Image (cartoon, rainbow, N blue to C red):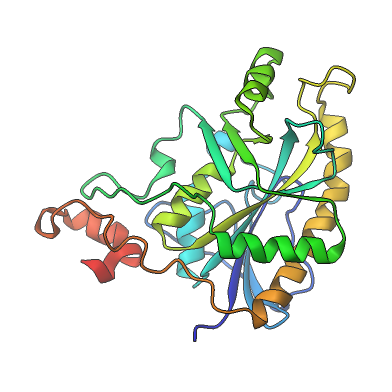
Length: 288
């Protein structure tokens, strides 16, 4: 049985992960360029962990600048079978209050300029992976158990609409998304989920609500000051959830997405270009 491992991609406010045993910082090179920052590795409750701040330390990268492909490829290089994406989100439902946690199970894509960073494929090799259920349910359920065990208010399931950003929604956009029935709004996690699936990594999102966007008639419109205040409280929650997830993962049956790409590659083997083979070797080399 493979050793339990968990990659963590920290969202806004979560730039460090404390408490790792055997902590080490590693600089990873990928065929898709450098990741957002150096990765921190170590062990937590006996589980191998790799932590990456999505926006870089000091929050240097805007959502549309994120090297999503490099980030997920780096996790694959370090042997992470599971990845948990932490995300600060706006709430689109009255019952999801700032400070609540949501274990989403669906995505809606409203990004415009991220085609290249949404897939490892193209440029000599075509693949279409199954993505009807975009998060890995066994991992989502395990994180849900961790959150409930800590006593935090959590919502089981929901749709995350991924917008382009970096500006927050207009009032018309916010009302439009509400009309679609989505639960939370963010700017980052959909691309991670797509790439994780192509990399055969089990992926789930822990969404932490910071505000009501700008649709709410009685709450103040979203502001950076308000978001930061809730973010600070949410960071401590996310750290506790990560630790508890590792504790549960250490004794759980193996969670793995291995094999999901076996029948997803459409390009004939002899037609795959040498450059594509080089770029994709770690991801699909065993199928070629």
